[in-house]
Image (cartoon, rainbow, N blue to C red; front, side, top):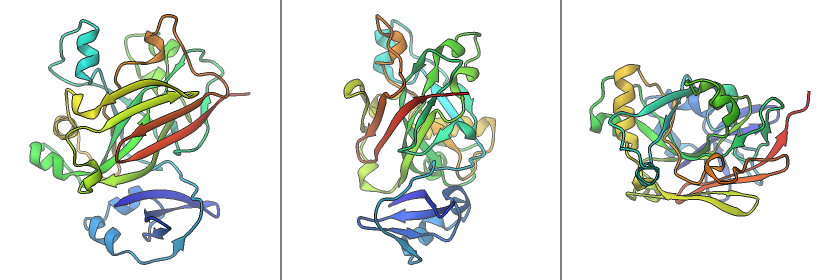
Amino acid sequence: MKLATIRVNGTTRAVRVDEDKAVDLGESDLVAFLRHSDWATRAAAADGETYEGALDYAPLVVAPEKVVCVGLNYRTHILEMGRELPSHPTLFSKYARALVGAYDEVTLPASATQMDWEAELGVVIGAEVRHADTEQARAAIAGYTVLNDVTARDWQYRTTQWDQGKTFEATTPIGPWLVTADDPAVSAQGLSLTCEVDGDTVQKADTGDLVFDPAALVAYLSEIITLVPGDVIATGTPGGVGHARKPARYLQDGSLLVTRIEGIGETRNTCRRETR
């Protein structure tokens, strides 16, 4: 199944996205819907109001309690940089106001000049989980989505702590929907992940190359804090980021950023420089 949050008449609604329509799930957004312990059964059986035609996708999770991001998590990229594989995940956080919808504009902050792309597989939590083993962690995953951790490199590297470069407002597209973990489309060991900037393919990888896979990340994080429905884990990006190029390449006003994951979908965002 595909589940999403869409904008309707000045508000938002959680929906199941079918081939030719979207079906209302009876909640204002996907986070609220996932708080029902039987959300999967409810979603499959939903027969509420329907929405047809082009849908206006809001950020998949409008107000998640947590967005946890992972760095340095693609095996091939780490090795090609001459680094050793990490023994523990590198973690940082993102605030909800950083998120935008799958087709919304991405803001390039007026105070940042080095805005970079980072295509990522997003994991959405569907059940409260704490101190999980691998199987419990896997069972707590509602599904997967597309995310791009657009990063202000000139702010990220001001200090050894990355957060300030990672969570500028309206910079992180997520969506358009969640594909549930039981869907055959996402059951493969690895899914092709790509990022395009103005028609150029700048990143290409396979999610099977993750050092720490989604279940391992959920288990690890659940040792630190309780994960709850609607929480998002951004699993890391592969090689090909603009900051590492020679010369470096960054997103510009008007750049078209397309992030695509096999079996899930794509986000397609025009970048616009902030005006004050």
